[in-house]
Every structure is written in C-alpha cells, then in structure tokens.
Length: 488
Figure 1: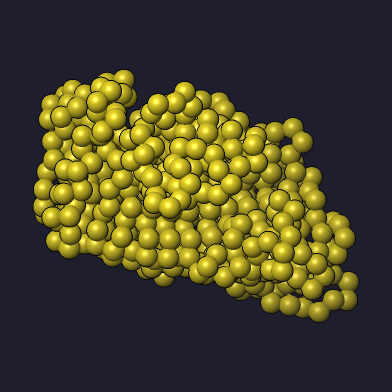
Figure 2: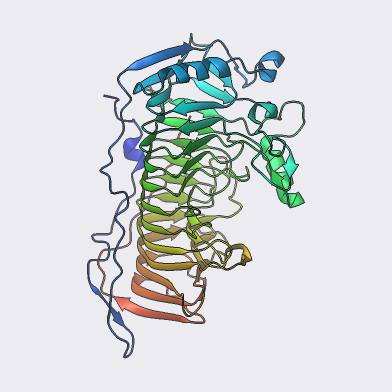
C-alpha cells in the first residue's frame, strides 16, 4: 500500500468550529412573516472516498535519457521531442491491463522526459516517480488540431491545440510517487517559456489575447473526457499553458495530494475544472494558478455530487461554480479549505475571490444545494461572490441560485476596498442564501434580490429586493491557520 503523504496533516489543518451544519431547525422570519424550513444541506460525493493507492502491478517502465537541468534540451530535441512515441507506445501496449506505466529516472541527473501530446487509455495508470519530470513540448505544431486555428497564435476562435495529456476511457489515472523528502512526480507545461521559433511565451500569448480581445490557442495540461473512475494522485502540475485539469462528462473523479503551481499572473490557467461531472472529490491538495482554483461547470451536461475538502488555494480566483450552469449544478459540499489572495511569490490575484458562484443570462441555469462549511479566507478582495450578472452577460438563460448555505466562514487581512457580492437575478429568481457563523473582517457588500437567513453572522446584507430572517442555527465561527505553499 502506498504510504500516507507526509503533508497530510498540514493539508487538512483547518480547525472546524462548526458543530453542526444547519441542524434541521427552522427559519424564524422577521416581523409577521411565515416560518419556513431551513434549506437542505449538501452531502457532496455519494462515494466513500479514501486516500488512493498506486496500482500494484507494473506493465512497463521507461527510463529517462535526458538531463534538462535548466528546463531545456537540445535544439533537435526541442524541435522533435524524443519521448512522445515511446511513451505512447507503452500506453498503447498497456491499455486495459489495470497496471501502471512508470516514468523513472536513469540516475540522479537523467530524470527528464520531453514529450508532445499523449493519450492515457482505459484501465491503465501513468505513474511518474519522485524527482522525475515530464516536460511538455514547446513546439506548437506538436499540438495542432486539424482544421482548427493555428496552435500558438491568436485567433477569433479557440481549440487549435490538443492537450499535453488526454485521458480517454474508464478506470484510468495519472499518479506520482512521493519520496521521504516530500518530492513527487511532476508534469511541467512550460508556460513561462518561449514557444519554439518565437519570442512569446504561452502565458504571454494569453496576455496578448486579452489586450486584443482575441483568443489564445494554448494547450491544456490534462484533459479527461467521459472517463469514469479517474484518479489524480500525489502529482505536481506546474506551469500549464492553459487550464491544468479538466474532468469532462465522467462519473467518479478523485484528485488527492495534487500540487498545482503556476503563478497568479498566468492568465487562464484554471486549477481543476469538473464539467458535466458526477461524484467528484477534490481533497488534500495545494492549488496555485492564475484563474479559478476550482471551477465547477454545468454546461452541456449537469454537474452534481461534488466534494471539495481540505485544500489550500493561493493567488487564484477562488473556489468557483460557473460560469456555464445552464444544465444545472447541485449537491456541492465545500468544506475545510483555505484561500489566500496572493501566490507563494507574493503575486496578487487579478480577481482575488474566496467563495464564488458566477453566471449570467448568457450561460446560466439552476445552482442548488451548495453548502460551504468551515472555510477560511485571507488577503482576498471579494470574500463571497454569488453573482447572476457575471461579466454583464446577456441572453435567454435564467441563472438561479437557491439553497446556498455558508456555515462557518472567517476572513482576515482583506485588501483595501474588499466587498462581497450577493445578487439574485430578479424578484422571481432571488438568491436563496443562509449565512451562519460568518465573521468577515470587511462587511461591505453589494446585494439585490436575495432572501438571506442569518445566524451569528456579522454580514447582514441590504439592498433592493433583499430580505433577511433569523435561522435557528448552531456551531461557531472556525479558527483559521494558513499554511505556506510547500517547497517542491
């Protein structure tokens, strides 16, 4: 059995002062209003999820032939990455075996692999040993999708690049081995490096796209498509050119012991995005990136039964739901996490948010039964954002957020001008929110069209169409500590 991570205690060390979630009590409405029931609380993932273990059997082991001490190889290797074909051949040969394909060091200096896009199949696990790094190609042509815009350029549309790793099929995984020093296997997308033949980095291209009102065609790091029972475990994901991990359309996803490290200044580098996903647990992980730490989406397919627990976020745009929610998002439990508004290098998030649900008439639907318990925020600008008018989007969809419970939330060291946003769509579709055991160091808020239940909360919003009532709650505000990002 794979031993427990040495960082496990630190990863989940958020002291929980909440003795009960909502407790099955009643909302006692103000001045003559009727008594109504407390919203049901979310339970999250329906599976019983424990810390994963590596597969016991090995199908193939590949040894490194590269040093890449400074993160680069020879011109010939950078032009034609030497490991793409052999990694893919091993993955093809091991499909369906239930065993692992291992990337291993040859010696203390030869511990790098350089590859273009590869596919992990059903019934196999790609394992990267501690101290070993799989580097993504800088040759945009390696990622080119036929018939799409040119990868590595700006365009009016996107989709020109394949991901570095695509997962297709059930019961697969990408996992690392952690050694006694806490080092894990890693995948490095090299977003900070110049695209081959240019003087522009992947991140620079993303910044240029924003300035031009265009789209960057950059590769995602890991894309999991319709793959049930996928595991991401004890792996370091660094410097993605675009999103780090997207889990799309599957049932059963566990991310545990994942360490994502990309600076807050790297645009559009989401951490982990479950989309159209069911039964998801994201736990015991450190996530630092330049966009949403997590973004749960319900676009072409609904997302439900999702647990986000015991994680730590740095410099991100927060723990988010949306903006695509038109197929629905429900039964989401977010518990025992910390969010810090700056990354480990001191870069400030460009959209420093704590807990967020974002959508609009452009892409909105019903988001229901979302429960946040015992979460801690520091140095953020927007502690709570529940916004049905995100980015002033227009369209014919109806964003409706209901049965949202925040029970146990503390914010500290909020930046100047910090403010929460609690905005329902209209009088017919108000934000349905309960605030229990909430202590924010800044209580400024923009609020409209919201029905808010309150218990032991120093945030009591007012505004057009806002009503408040008293909840018969229990528990207390959590005590908070904020661990530093670990040394990789």
